[in-house]
Image 1 (cartoon, helix red, strand yellow):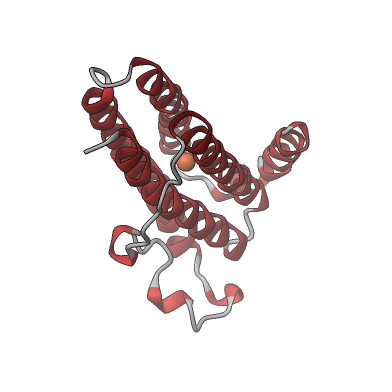
Image 2 (cartoon, protein in one colour):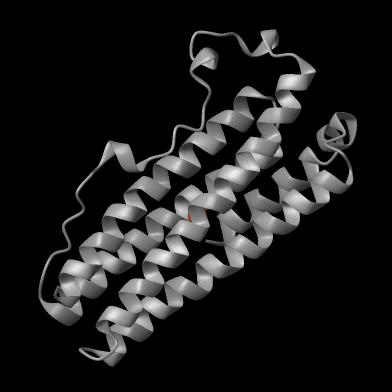
Length: 185
Ligand SMILES: [Fe+2]
C-alpha cells in the first residue's frame, strides 16, 4: 500500500472519529453536562483540524488527494437507541451515572483503536518514507495524550463513585477551560 493509500485509511478513521466525538458531545448535552460536552466539542474540532492537516500534507508533499471512504459500520453506536425518542427530563439518575461511565469507556476504547491503527501505518511507511512516518508519529503522540487524559478522567470519576452532585458542580470549570482552548485554537 502506498503512503497516500495509508493516509486515506487514516482519513477514513478520522471522519469516524469526528462522529464519535459528536455522539459523545450529544450524550453529554442530553445529560445536561455542558462541561463534558464542551470537551468533546473541542475534540471534534481538533479532529477536523487534524483531518485538514492530513489533506494538506498529502497534496503538498505527495501531490495526491487523500480519499476518505465512509464506513458507517466503523462508527460505534454510543447514544442509546432508547434516548432517540426520549426527552432529557425522563432520564433517571442511575441511567445518567451508567451513561457517564459508558461514554468514558467508549472514548478510551476508540482512541486506543486509533493509536493501534496509526502505529501500524507508521510501521508500514517508515521504510518507504521517513518524513511521512514522522508526520504520522505526531498524530500518534497526540492520540496518546488524549488516551492519558481520558483514562485519568475515568479513574477520577470512579474514585468519586460517579457522585452526581460533584459531577454537576465541576461542569462550569470544564466548560470554561474547554471554551478557552477552543478560542486559542
Ligand atoms: Fe479524539
